[in-house]
Image (cartoon, rainbow, N blue to C red):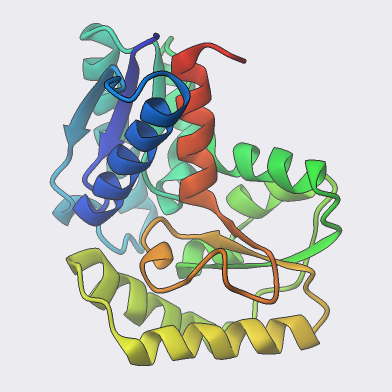
Length: 231
């Protein structure tokens, strides 16, 4: 098996979900006693939390690049950035290191195109929902995206940053997401992209009327395939 490098800590909850998901797939598809060859750098999330200026994003790119280089130097042959929002700096980081980085939205786009999804809605933090760095990757795979519903942004940022990223799971937030999905379906969405790595804590991906594309699960599954070497 090949060695993966995971840039984590954004949040630790997300990193835990990646680690568990990847290893469960390896155990299922390789051997019950197998574990994934992985290097993980769990970053301090404080300087990367809720970035809101170009200067802060430039600093984030430096932090992620340095982490990527350390993992590469330690022997990682493929890298993951364990956060949807941090893919805003993907191009900058990828241009500064030699080791390939598996892009989360590319993995989601491939999966949706294979399933024939024509129209979808993105649910995630404000920058993922509203900025082009994530949306254009899905559009490139022929997925038509509903415009972001700005009335959802404040609730989603509160749920993500104040609850899920610190390990809090609340029933009220589960109900809020279900209501959003119902309204998005009435707006014409054929599927929901869960473009936040912690939202899976309050969304039952397998028990919704609309198909739910959990970006973290798809990203982790593709990483596990790469580790095994099937593709």
